[in-house]
Image 1 (cartoon, rainbow, N blue to C red):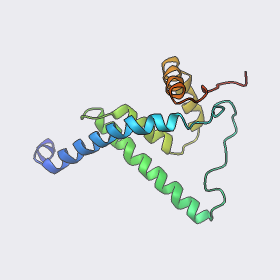
Image 2 (image 1 turned 180 degrees about the vertical axis):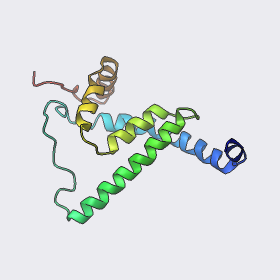
Image 3 (image 1 turned 135 degrees about the horizontal axis):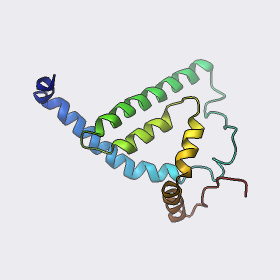
Length: 138
């Protein structure tokens, strides 16, 4: 199997291209997304209505399937990038943000409550003139 991988130059170039695109995308996309998180997103347990709540159920199902498919592909790519060149952890975090699964909000909140992550998010928000994230009603 390793011989097949070693001899497949197209596969290696594809993985390298995805790595570079993910890295560059993360430099732009992560700050852009972080400053758009509503200030009170983590305060309330109840979730907001989906963006396409008014759409036909079939359209919602197709959009949900597409979003989860993209998230799944990014998750696999992120896992591969743990041993190959690229931003594996960032890619996996973006994938987890896209994929819908039970308990997702609690995982997101747990990650944001880590002091280094919380400081980094609020630093990005401050640089963009946005108020810091709130983790409680205080």
